[in-house]
Image 1 (tube, rainbow, N blue to C red):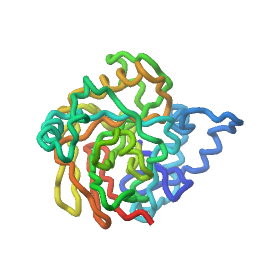
Image 2 (image 1 turned 90 degrees about the vertical axis):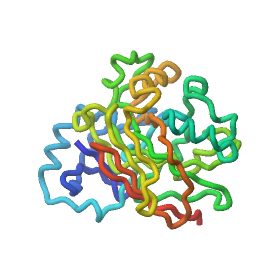
Image 3 (image 1 turned 45 degrees about the horizontal axis):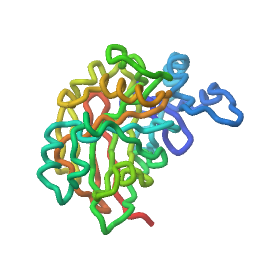
Length: 286
Protein backbone atom coordinates (compact mmCIF):
# COMPACT_ATOMS: atom_id res chain seq x y z
CA UNK A 1 0.00 0.00 0.00
CA UNK A 2 1.19 3.50 -0.87
CA UNK A 3 -0.12 6.24 1.39
CA UNK A 4 0.27 9.91 0.61
CA UNK A 5 -0.69 13.26 2.04
CA UNK A 6 -1.61 15.95 -0.43
CA UNK A 7 -3.11 19.41 -0.90
CA UNK A 8 -2.40 20.34 2.74
CA UNK A 9 -5.11 18.34 4.53
CA UNK A 10 -5.92 15.27 2.45
CA UNK A 11 -4.88 11.62 2.76
CA UNK A 12 -4.77 9.30 -0.21
CA UNK A 13 -3.85 5.86 -1.47
CA UNK A 14 -1.77 5.80 -4.67
CA UNK A 15 -2.51 3.13 -7.27
CA UNK A 16 -1.13 3.12 -10.80
CA UNK A 17 -0.34 6.83 -10.72
CA UNK A 18 -3.74 7.82 -9.35
CA UNK A 19 -4.51 9.24 -5.89
CA UNK A 20 -7.67 7.92 -4.24
CA UNK A 21 -8.99 10.18 -1.48
CA UNK A 22 -9.47 8.47 1.90
CA UNK A 23 -9.47 11.68 3.95
CA UNK A 24 -12.80 10.81 5.57
CA UNK A 25 -11.02 8.11 7.58
CA UNK A 26 -9.21 10.83 9.54
CA UNK A 27 -12.39 10.98 11.64
CA UNK A 28 -11.37 7.55 12.96
CA UNK A 29 -8.14 8.88 14.46
CA UNK A 30 -9.91 10.10 17.58
CA UNK A 31 -9.99 13.35 19.49
CA UNK A 32 -7.16 14.25 21.84
CA UNK A 33 -7.00 16.79 24.59
CA UNK A 34 -3.93 18.55 25.86
CA UNK A 35 -1.22 17.34 26.09
CA UNK A 36 -1.24 15.83 22.60
CA UNK A 37 0.40 12.44 21.98
CA UNK A 38 4.03 12.31 20.86
CA UNK A 39 3.34 10.21 17.80
CA UNK A 40 1.69 10.46 14.37
CA UNK A 41 -1.96 9.47 14.77
CA UNK A 42 -2.37 7.87 11.34
CA UNK A 43 0.86 5.85 11.48
CA UNK A 44 -0.05 4.62 14.97
CA UNK A 45 -3.32 3.11 13.68
CA UNK A 46 -2.16 2.01 10.25
CA UNK A 47 -2.55 -1.72 10.88
CA UNK A 48 -6.00 -1.25 12.38
CA UNK A 49 -7.27 0.93 9.53
CA UNK A 50 -5.59 -0.83 6.64
CA UNK A 51 -8.60 -2.80 5.38
CA UNK A 52 -10.83 0.28 5.49
CA UNK A 53 -8.18 2.32 3.68
CA UNK A 54 -7.85 -0.24 0.91
CA UNK A 55 -11.63 -0.54 0.57
CA UNK A 56 -12.05 3.23 0.40
CA UNK A 57 -9.36 3.48 -2.26
CA UNK A 58 -11.21 0.97 -4.44
CA UNK A 59 -14.17 3.30 -4.89
CA UNK A 60 -14.10 6.40 -7.05
CA UNK A 61 -12.01 7.45 -10.01
CA UNK A 62 -9.26 9.29 -8.17
CA UNK A 63 -6.95 12.08 -9.32
CA UNK A 64 -3.68 11.78 -11.28
CA UNK A 65 -0.65 12.17 -9.01
CA UNK A 66 0.59 15.02 -11.18
CA UNK A 67 -2.53 17.05 -10.39
CA UNK A 68 -1.97 17.23 -6.62
CA UNK A 69 0.61 18.86 -4.36
CA UNK A 70 2.35 16.14 -2.40
CA UNK A 71 3.03 16.81 1.27
CA UNK A 72 5.34 14.77 3.51
CA UNK A 73 3.69 11.36 4.05
CA UNK A 74 4.27 11.64 7.82
CA UNK A 75 2.39 14.64 9.23
CA UNK A 76 3.75 14.63 12.77
CA UNK A 77 7.09 12.86 13.24
CA UNK A 78 8.12 13.01 16.87
CA UNK A 79 11.78 12.99 15.87
CA UNK A 80 14.05 12.50 12.90
CA UNK A 81 17.07 10.33 13.64
CA UNK A 82 19.80 10.53 11.02
CA UNK A 83 22.91 8.50 10.21
CA UNK A 84 26.10 10.37 9.20
CA UNK A 85 28.64 8.99 6.69
CA UNK A 86 26.99 5.57 6.51
CA UNK A 87 28.44 4.61 3.11
CA UNK A 88 32.17 3.94 2.79
CA UNK A 89 32.57 5.82 -0.49
CA UNK A 90 30.87 8.91 0.95
CA UNK A 91 33.25 8.74 3.91
CA UNK A 92 36.16 8.57 1.43
CA UNK A 93 34.95 11.57 -0.61
CA UNK A 94 34.47 13.62 2.55
CA UNK A 95 37.91 12.72 3.90
CA UNK A 96 39.48 13.74 0.59
CA UNK A 97 37.92 17.25 0.64
CA UNK A 98 38.64 18.90 4.02
CA UNK A 99 37.66 22.34 2.69
CA UNK A 100 34.06 21.27 2.07
CA UNK A 101 33.88 18.65 4.83
CA UNK A 102 35.67 19.88 8.00
CA UNK A 103 37.78 17.13 9.51
CA UNK A 104 35.95 17.34 12.83
CA UNK A 105 32.82 15.96 11.13
CA UNK A 106 34.53 13.20 9.13
CA UNK A 107 34.44 10.29 11.53
CA UNK A 108 33.06 6.81 11.10
CA UNK A 109 29.44 6.31 12.08
CA UNK A 110 30.55 3.93 14.81
CA UNK A 111 32.52 6.81 16.36
CA UNK A 112 30.05 9.63 15.83
CA UNK A 113 26.77 7.78 16.40
CA UNK A 114 23.48 9.25 15.19
CA UNK A 115 22.12 12.81 15.26
CA UNK A 116 18.73 14.52 15.34
CA UNK A 117 17.12 16.91 12.88
CA UNK A 118 14.38 19.40 13.71
CA UNK A 119 10.92 18.12 12.81
CA UNK A 120 10.12 21.63 11.54
CA UNK A 121 12.50 20.91 8.65
CA UNK A 122 10.09 18.37 7.10
CA UNK A 123 8.37 19.16 3.80
CA UNK A 124 6.87 17.18 0.95
CA UNK A 125 7.96 16.97 -2.66
CA UNK A 126 5.37 19.52 -3.74
CA UNK A 127 6.63 22.15 -1.32
CA UNK A 128 10.23 22.31 -2.50
CA UNK A 129 13.50 23.26 -0.80
CA UNK A 130 13.90 26.93 0.22
CA UNK A 131 17.61 27.77 0.34
CA UNK A 132 18.33 29.35 3.71
CA UNK A 133 21.63 31.07 2.83
CA UNK A 134 22.21 31.67 -0.87
CA UNK A 135 25.79 32.75 -0.16
CA UNK A 136 26.68 29.33 1.31
CA UNK A 137 26.82 25.91 -0.28
CA UNK A 138 23.75 23.70 0.20
CA UNK A 139 24.12 20.06 -0.89
CA UNK A 140 21.68 17.30 -1.78
CA UNK A 141 21.86 13.96 0.04
CA UNK A 142 19.46 11.20 -1.00
CA UNK A 143 18.61 8.57 1.62
CA UNK A 144 16.22 5.72 2.31
CA UNK A 145 13.87 6.93 5.05
CA UNK A 146 12.44 4.38 7.48
CA UNK A 147 9.20 5.26 9.27
CA UNK A 148 8.62 3.63 12.65
CA UNK A 149 5.19 2.10 13.26
CA UNK A 150 5.26 1.05 16.93
CA UNK A 151 6.41 2.49 20.22
CA UNK A 152 9.58 0.62 21.07
CA UNK A 153 12.86 0.73 22.92
CA UNK A 154 15.97 -1.45 23.05
CA UNK A 155 14.91 -3.24 19.87
CA UNK A 156 17.14 -6.22 18.99
CA UNK A 157 18.50 -6.25 15.46
CA UNK A 158 16.74 -9.57 14.85
CA UNK A 159 13.32 -7.96 15.38
CA UNK A 160 14.00 -4.45 14.11
CA UNK A 161 12.09 -4.68 10.83
CA UNK A 162 8.93 -5.67 12.72
CA UNK A 163 8.60 -2.12 14.09
CA UNK A 164 8.68 -0.50 10.63
CA UNK A 165 5.48 1.07 9.26
CA UNK A 166 6.98 1.77 5.86
CA UNK A 167 9.60 3.45 3.74
CA UNK A 168 9.90 6.63 1.71
CA UNK A 169 12.57 8.67 -0.03
CA UNK A 170 14.40 11.25 2.04
CA UNK A 171 16.46 14.26 1.00
CA UNK A 172 18.76 15.34 3.80
CA UNK A 173 19.61 18.83 2.56
CA UNK A 174 22.80 20.17 4.12
CA UNK A 175 24.48 23.55 4.50
CA UNK A 176 28.24 22.98 4.40
CA UNK A 177 30.28 24.49 7.21
CA UNK A 178 31.91 23.92 10.58
CA UNK A 179 28.74 24.02 12.69
CA UNK A 180 27.21 20.88 14.18
CA UNK A 181 25.33 18.67 11.73
CA UNK A 182 21.91 19.06 13.33
CA UNK A 183 22.23 22.85 13.10
CA UNK A 184 23.20 22.89 9.41
CA UNK A 185 20.62 20.28 8.41
CA UNK A 186 17.56 21.61 10.25
CA UNK A 187 16.40 24.76 8.44
CA UNK A 188 12.80 24.75 7.26
CA UNK A 189 12.49 22.58 4.15
CA UNK A 190 15.80 20.75 4.62
CA UNK A 191 14.17 17.35 5.14
CA UNK A 192 12.12 16.34 2.11
CA UNK A 193 10.09 13.13 2.56
CA UNK A 194 8.03 11.40 -0.08
CA UNK A 195 6.58 10.96 -2.48
CA UNK A 196 4.50 8.59 -0.35
CA UNK A 197 4.86 5.96 2.37
CA UNK A 198 5.23 2.42 1.04
CA UNK A 199 4.34 -0.40 3.42
CA UNK A 200 6.91 -3.18 3.99
CA UNK A 201 4.93 -5.84 2.11
CA UNK A 202 5.56 -3.92 -1.14
CA UNK A 203 9.28 -3.44 -0.51
CA UNK A 204 10.51 -6.92 0.28
CA UNK A 205 14.15 -6.74 1.35
CA UNK A 206 15.07 -3.10 2.20
CA UNK A 207 18.75 -4.02 2.28
CA UNK A 208 18.95 -4.44 -1.51
CA UNK A 209 17.32 -1.34 -3.04
CA UNK A 210 18.81 0.64 -5.94
CA UNK A 211 18.89 4.39 -5.32
CA UNK A 212 19.70 7.34 -7.58
CA UNK A 213 19.58 11.12 -7.47
CA UNK A 214 19.77 13.51 -10.41
CA UNK A 215 19.88 17.30 -10.58
CA UNK A 216 18.40 18.81 -13.74
CA UNK A 217 18.64 15.36 -15.33
CA UNK A 218 22.31 14.78 -14.45
CA UNK A 219 22.81 11.68 -12.27
CA UNK A 220 24.98 12.53 -9.27
CA UNK A 221 24.34 9.76 -6.76
CA UNK A 222 23.79 6.05 -7.36
CA UNK A 223 24.07 3.22 -4.89
CA UNK A 224 22.34 0.20 -3.39
CA UNK A 225 21.30 -0.05 0.25
CA UNK A 226 23.37 -3.23 0.51
CA UNK A 227 26.38 -0.88 0.76
CA UNK A 228 25.26 0.69 4.04
CA UNK A 229 27.90 0.44 6.77
CA UNK A 230 25.22 0.04 9.47
CA UNK A 231 22.18 -1.63 7.95
CA UNK A 232 18.58 -0.79 8.72
CA UNK A 233 18.17 -3.28 11.60
CA UNK A 234 21.39 -1.99 13.18
CA UNK A 235 20.29 1.63 12.88
CA UNK A 236 16.88 0.95 14.43
CA UNK A 237 18.46 -1.03 17.23
CA UNK A 238 21.04 1.70 17.91
CA UNK A 239 18.49 4.51 17.84
CA UNK A 240 16.06 2.65 20.10
CA UNK A 241 18.82 2.10 22.67
CA UNK A 242 19.07 5.87 23.15
CA UNK A 243 15.49 7.05 22.45
CA UNK A 244 12.07 5.51 22.78
CA UNK A 245 10.84 5.38 19.19
CA UNK A 246 7.21 6.30 18.46
CA UNK A 247 4.90 5.79 15.47
CA UNK A 248 5.84 8.32 12.83
CA UNK A 249 9.46 8.75 13.94
CA UNK A 250 11.77 8.77 10.92
CA UNK A 251 15.19 7.14 10.61
CA UNK A 252 17.31 8.55 7.76
CA UNK A 253 19.78 5.83 6.85
CA UNK A 254 22.64 7.83 5.28
CA UNK A 255 23.69 9.08 1.85
CA UNK A 256 26.13 7.64 -0.69
CA UNK A 257 28.96 9.41 -2.49
CA UNK A 258 28.26 12.07 -5.09
CA UNK A 259 26.78 14.78 -2.87
CA UNK A 260 26.87 18.17 -4.54
CA UNK A 261 25.63 21.73 -4.49
CA UNK A 262 22.17 22.80 -5.59
CA UNK A 263 21.06 26.27 -6.62
CA UNK A 264 17.73 28.06 -6.83
CA UNK A 265 15.80 26.77 -9.83
CA UNK A 266 17.37 23.30 -9.79
CA UNK A 267 15.10 20.27 -10.01
CA UNK A 268 16.07 17.28 -7.87
CA UNK A 269 14.81 13.87 -8.94
CA UNK A 270 15.38 10.97 -6.55
CA UNK A 271 14.37 7.36 -7.16
CA UNK A 272 14.47 4.35 -4.85
CA UNK A 273 13.57 0.89 -6.08
CA UNK A 274 10.20 -0.28 -4.79
CA UNK A 275 9.16 3.22 -3.69
CA UNK A 276 9.12 5.37 -6.81
CA UNK A 277 10.39 8.82 -7.75
CA UNK A 278 10.37 12.05 -5.80
CA UNK A 279 10.78 15.28 -7.76
CA UNK A 280 11.17 18.62 -6.04
CA UNK A 281 12.40 22.11 -6.90
CA UNK A 282 15.00 24.25 -5.13
CA UNK A 283 14.07 27.88 -4.58
CA UNK A 284 15.37 30.96 -2.82
CA UNK A 285 13.85 31.81 0.55
CA UNK A 286 11.50 34.80 0.06
